[in-house]
Structures are given as C-alpha cells and as structure tokens.
Length: 321
Ligand code: PBG
Ligand code: ZN
Image 1 (spheres, rainbow, N blue to C red):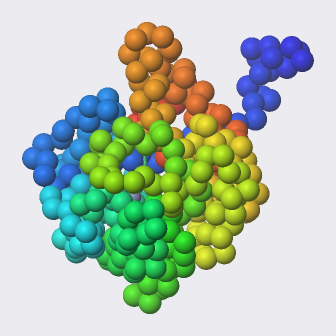
Image 2 (image 1 turned 90 degrees about the horizontal axis):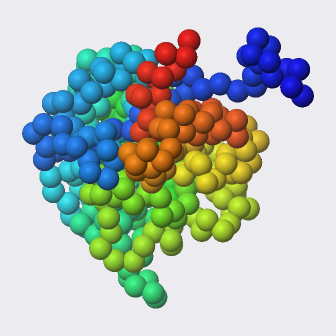
C-alpha cells in the first residue's frame, strides 16, 4: 500500500476534498444587540445586530464563503412565536440587508419557533398526557407563515428545524401558494434529540422552560427511524436533506445519501465547542482537528457542511493551495 503513499503520488489518489463552496456559516442576529456580542459558549462567534450583519457576511464572502444560515433572537417572546413571522422581524430585516449588500450570497433561514416562544419549544404547546407537548398540526400553520415571511424578505432557502410531521409539505404548499415556487427547502430531516445542542441554546436563547425535545426530535438509538424521517421529507418535496449533528452520526450521512437528494450535515455547537475547548488547553491542534472533522463528514457522503468553522476553514483551505 505504501507505493501510493509517497509524497509525489499521494495527491493523485486522494478520494475526497473539502472545498469552500461546500461550507455554510451559521450566524446569529439579535434584535437586542447594539454591537456584535461575543457568545461565551461559542468562542469566536457573535450575536450581530441587524445593522451589522451585512458586514459580517461581507467578511465571510471575502474568505470565499457563499452561503449563510441565519438564526434570529427577537426582543420579545410569546406563546405563539408571533415575532417569527413579523415582516419587520429580526431575521426578515437581516435577510433584506444581506441581499441588498450582497445579492449573490446564498441566504438560508432557520425556520423554527424556539427562539420566539416564551416556553422555548419549537412550536405551539398543548396539554398532553405526560405534560405540555407540541401541537403538531397547529404548529404547521405557524411554520408555513414563518417560511413565507422569510421568502418574502428574500431568503433563497428556508430550513425548517422543528421536526414536526408534515412540515415540508406544509411549507412547500404555502410557498407555492404565495408564488415563491423558486424558494428551496433544506429540511432538518434527520435531527436527533442530541445533547450537543447545549451551547447553541445559550447562543440563541432558545432553552426550554419545561420538558425536553425528545417528543419531536429522533432518539439517538434509532437508525431505521432516522432514515425514514429523511425519506418522508424527500417525498414531501424537500430539496436538500440534513443530518444533525454530524460527527457522531456519519452512518446516517452515508445512509441518507442513497435517497438521492443533496445531503447537508450540521456540525453543531457542541461539536464546535468541544474542539475549541480542547484546543484552548493545548490538548489538540485546532486547525488539524477541524480540517479532519470536515473531511470525514465529506467522506461519509455530505454534499454541504454547516459549520461554525466555515470562515476559519476557508482561510486554512487557501493556505493549503
Ligand atoms: C432550533 C435549532 C437548534 C439548532 C439548530 N436549530 C437547537 C435545538 O433544536 O434545540 C442546534 C444548532 C447547534 O447546536 O449548533 N430548532
Ligand atoms: Zn426549534
């Protein structure tokens, strides 16, 4: 085997690469921020005010990143998440300002309610036998409204992350009905009830006040169910499927690739925070671990990778050339 591992020949037989065009940078826009606020749980990441988001996107663009995924933190929350579909809400403002400054940037918006509800759950609550639980079908109307408001602001892709049954069909129907037939849907189709979202909930102020998300997100023990979730969303008209988190779930990336749609993998906040924390202690080399993690996500079969390392990785990829 070592004949092909010589320094001259090895590059010729390389099977997988990470390229900047594969990377999507998640960004937080905060209606209450006056200037970029550092996120303690995600060192190097910030909550941006609507007025500062175009500048942050410009910096990413200068590094060769072409796509961003927006999360909003509203000034006010209520049980029905009404700020999530406000035409002048924080995400809607951010989309407009990015598209104005950089029309050829791909703007993806997270469609969910958990940053906008006072209880912190991903939709409208109802009383269930074991306590409050998501009301699936009433929450579908909410997701459709949010998605249409993002499309109207100029989003290229809407990304529902609520894990409600029927969310893709509801959103596709509403988008088409409102004339947004070209707005694509990237479904968080295979999203696990993972402990790796901890730092995000601090970043997006989306922690819940009761219960947990295990009645709508997938049990990490279940592989067949996880594949079926993505198959159902493909059938409902999703354009891009997603596996989330990425690194612990590469078997699902490989499995869902066979459905035939493009597959996104989300390297989530806990994956980022673990690498950052170990690197800060000098226990691992940040750059090498990050690039290995992204390469292995590609090797498993992801077409695109959503990662908080997008900007840094783009810089490192430039240095490799
Ligand atoms: C909201 C949402 C979450 C993430 C993306 N969208 C949190 C959750 O479901 O609790 C997690 C992202 C990350 O951890 O980086 N539905
Ligand atoms: Zn949510």
